[in-house]
Amino acid sequence: MTSAVRWTSLVAAALGILLAGAELLVNGEDCGGSGQTAGAGFEWPSDLPDPSAPSGTWRMAASMADLSVRVEKGGKTLRLKRRHAAFHSRLLPGWNWVGPIPALLKERKELEDWPFVRPGKPDQVEIGCLWAHPVEGARLVLSFGAAPAAGELDLLLAYLKTAAPDASTTVQIRRNGTELHREVFVGGGGDSRRLHVPLEVVGGPQQSRPAPLELVIEPGKRGKNHLCLDGIVRFPGTLGAGEAMP
Image (cartoon, rainbow, N blue to C red; front, side, top):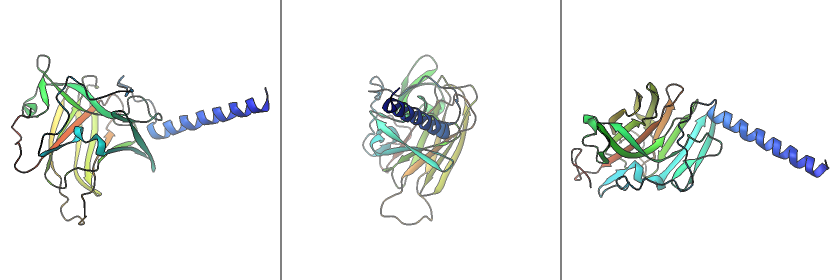
């Protein structure tokens, strides 16, 4: 083996070790993948209602252009890059990404006035949402830079049908370092939960523009915490919570 070939092999081996170490640092051990992998050309499902936000509203699923995503662990930060319609990184397992996905949920009274829903199979409804599987041993942070400064966030949390029967996720909603709400969501496949969270930071410092709205997502336990979410803010004078959107 020539010295040039030997040197190339050593560099390749060292790079492999660094990448493996980075993945271990960020994600820890395997937490049980879902098979949900963000691939090239992954877009909002064409057979679901339009992901855009109707006039007079702001919607999370329609704000991908203003979204940034990062993973935090042990003082280290990994920023996920947007490729096509999803945020992901080669340093994370295939199921750790953020992007649009369809979901079948159990039919529940609290979903009757969710504006982005349609009938599915018997006793089920279908929605489009943002896949946000928590990262094992770390915090997944979704930062919406153009979220409204005030109003009420109508947030939907749901577990895909592939989730473990005892899935557990903690979701913290915060702005400018202030916690607005913290929710521990325990459930199984098809379960959902609606939250109504005021967005204004009372007594916070005055700013020329509102600070990003952040959702900090952490696993409550190891396993298939197959979480998806979406949220909407209705501005004054627009559709009420019980009115359907086209």
